[in-house]
Image (cartoon, one colour):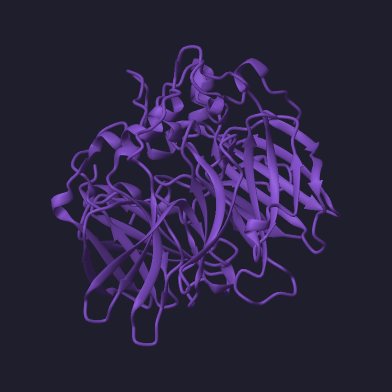
Length: 484
């Protein structure tokens, strides 16, 4: 098995300064565009300034985040938010102090665009320039979505190609990660799922087929198996219980091979949403559930009740409008449609084959959970909340207790662009969400990125401490925290 046969069978088709003029450019109709400005070069390590509160004792480690950060070049620019060059950022907390460093992932795509002084390689929503040579998906791999720990390496992840290995100390790119020679260039999603012992599960999608990856905590490949899917859906994330993989197949389906990627998909609500449940021990054992149509990027961890009911939550959109147009609008300085507001929903898959989707009414994205409860029964989901007004992104953080139907949240206000937050447990804590929430925001008034720490038991009290950088970095997408 190799990438060519997989795709065919599927029918699927450092010390450099920032450029202030580029970094702080803002469209006349909203300075929120600071969150989508360009970073011209790597960011040298620098101390952050503690501006309020007191760092909690016992909190030590590094928050790694990844996201697009270079969109525009003189000869041509990206036209979708998801197509900027990946910039890995490290926020280090140690001895009550915090620092920041950031470095671009050295991808073939970035080298090609740098040489051309133009964005000539497209991607998710940006077309290729005429005549550009594309030999494989890794030629357009932005490595700009998330990160994964693998032994002494940090991997920068995209979703249609290989991981890139990164030195977690220097943030230097070590190169593409090939999990097995015959699997070079196979797709590897940006949202792996982790078991408590460190085992990693992930998917790679190609039309109506998926490769199921299983890795050790060190990143060594343990298994890779191809499975057929009921729909050729776009899949950005999946979830898992202790015994099962859960794949939501939404009705945004691939209808042709084309570039950019999103132009090859069509919204077909008449197909409905199907949810595929695979047995981890035997991937041929499967169940398929049916639900009304919705679009989803992100899901929380799943678990299984004693009676066999599988439960999880996700953030649903009414259709694929954000993937097609919303991400392009943000990069162009336009507010996306108010209709593109994700809602936290709770999903139950019963042993009798019935799927129930319960609406919470919470406008929310980026669901995260306590990693110690991955695959096990849990009640709480961390999320970023969306406000209204001039801020088209997220401005609050909250934890929703699904069992009690209660939400504890903190609103930064419309002058903050809030990113996905990460939970990390206290060293001596064992209860669910007994620990800290770490979140980054862009403070539009200060024109600076800020790192906030919350007590996860009392989010509404506000940050227990906040550090501020001497610059603003564009909005990142996903990250992981490593204690130490």
